[in-house]
Image 1 (cartoon, one colour):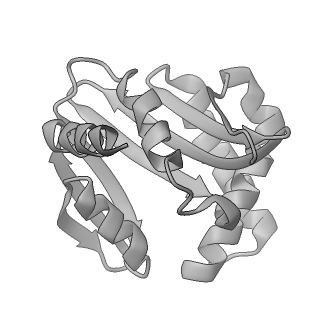
Image 2: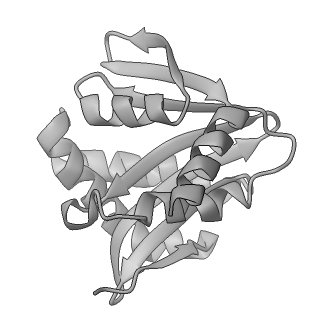
Length: 172
């Protein structure tokens, strides 16, 4: 069995690892909701926008899931003030649904978010039914949508996310 390492990406690592993160996201999204522009254009935009935001805000973090030096997943989030914004979560297809990995990821992250956080927010592509269902199980509810971009907005109480995590942890 592969050993998965969960760790926070250092700010200065984004330059060397950002393209690998984007490649994982692109391969997943191309199945669900293909990008409108070429790979190169989308990658350059994502590296510039997401990378800049990641490097310039201490509250924005990325957890990478690695095995044998290769990124198998990542979770980008921002915990600031009262809001824990789950910005991007990607797992390579070969580890999707592996027992315990999602819970292990949340165990690391939930232990790190500030005590001021009360709410959880996330977005999902309107075509990504699986992500929408997962957000529902985490206690988030749909609060709106952007029809032009095909994005649904979700929000919930941190207490509901903690209840999900604690319930799952007790079952393990």
